Structures are given as C-alpha cells and as structure tokens.
Length: 196
Image (cartoon, rainbow, N blue to C red; front, side, top):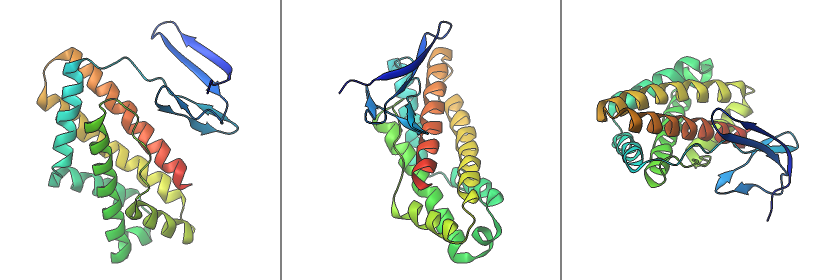
C-alpha cells in the first residue's frame, strides 16, 4: 500500500523528512505511525546504526535484561513518587505498579536486543493493562501519563550511565544514545496512547 502524503517538511540540517500520512497506511518501512487526530505522524527513523553502535545498544539491553536491583529500584522510586496516593499506599496496587514497571523495562530491553534502534511496540501485557484499568476505574487516569514519563526519565538516566560505562567510542555512543532515546520515547508514547 502506498501512503498518501498530506503534508511534509524536510529538515536540511539533519536531512530528516517528516510527513503526515493517511491512517489507513499505518506502517511505513517498519515504522509504526502514531495517531494524531485524524492524521498519523511517522517519527524520523534516524541514521542506520553502525555495527559498533548496534552492539552497544545490545550490550545495554542485556544489562537491563539482567534486572539489576538498582535499575528496578530507581524506576520504581520515580514512578511511585509520581503516582497518586492509592497507587502508592495500597499494597496490592503498589505491587501491581512494580509488576508493570518490571514488565515495561524487560519488554523495552528485549525489543532493543532483538532490533537495536528499531521501534519498540506498545507493551499491553496483563501486568500493564491491569494497573492502567485500575487507575482509570478510580478516576486517576492522569497518573498513567505522569508515572510513565517519570519511569521514562529513570530508565533514560540508567540507559545513559550504562552506555557510558560500556564504551568510550564517541561515534558509537552518539548513535546508541540517539537510537535509545528514539526507541524509549516512541515506546512510552505508543504504550500510553494504547492505554488511553
């Protein structure tokens, strides 16, 4: 299927092309379109990763898949601090939040290990859906947006520290950090949009 471009912009500095396409064309060269009203916006895919950068992304992902206690603690602390009171104080809900955090971190890492720099699809596992439904049922749906972005910040900080601990190659680091940022932010945006 050919996507009908309804508007476009070319950034001559970064040599990136952005376009709005029809919603019936949801996949363009492997990029999943994000819905924006009645249009879909496909984020710039960035430059292809060098073998060194792809290897660095995989190495960081492997660290995440080992579930380091400090990573999980940082993500949980950030999400808990941003969560509304019932999600923090009720033991069953707090446990569901922790399970959702863990599921999201592992999903992100597994996808990045498999396809460094690729788009990470939304995570709609039972752990994630359960706590989101509970937040909506209780009328605290804003907590979903707030907590996901707090978790994103914690994951990104850990991602950067890990990447810098594994490589001193500036070119590989630049590409790996750009790819990690794109994958993480796209994953968060897509998951939050799917939960809405």
